[in-house]
Amino acid sequence: MRKKDDEKQRCIKTAVVELILKEGFQGASISKIARAAGVSPATVYIYYENKDAMLRDIYQEYAEDTFQYLLESLHPNMAGEQIIEELIRSYYSYIVENEEIFHFVEQFSTCPALQSNCGFMKGPGNLNQLLTELKRRQILNNYSNDNLYAILFSPVKTIAVKKCDSEEAAMDRLDELITIIQKALIRGY
Image (cartoon, rainbow, N blue to C red; front, side, top):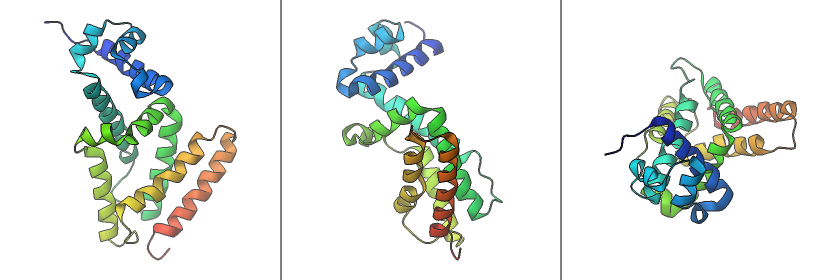
């Protein structure tokens, strides 16, 4: 039996992200992925049972990494305003620093046939728990967590992916967005 090699698996994941973004789910065959990763198709099957399992596994790993990145800078003693600001700034930074992975996760998360098979993921559960706790402590207004996610993160994507703005203009818009969201979500703001 052949052994797994972390570097080969990293190359496969990189190839998957690049090919999915370039050619879509249907255009990224195992043979193309293997060629782009510099491995044989048989090597891909050492790491992944099939293409769907590979896409799910890679999506889950990168989606979990995103949530981990968002939550790792939060501290229990932070005020609600600080939590909102940190979540927004962290998400912006993650998108800018991990552009291809962000687009891969976004593309995958809008494909119900693939994403629905991912089961429970720890990261969204942790964020959901945080939002629920902030509502329980009456820091956030009692909106549904789905709406809170949309308000917190969707506008950040718009600012982060807009290429025609300077970094200074993007930061100004991000600062304004933080104020708007804090006013909308913080109880008694």
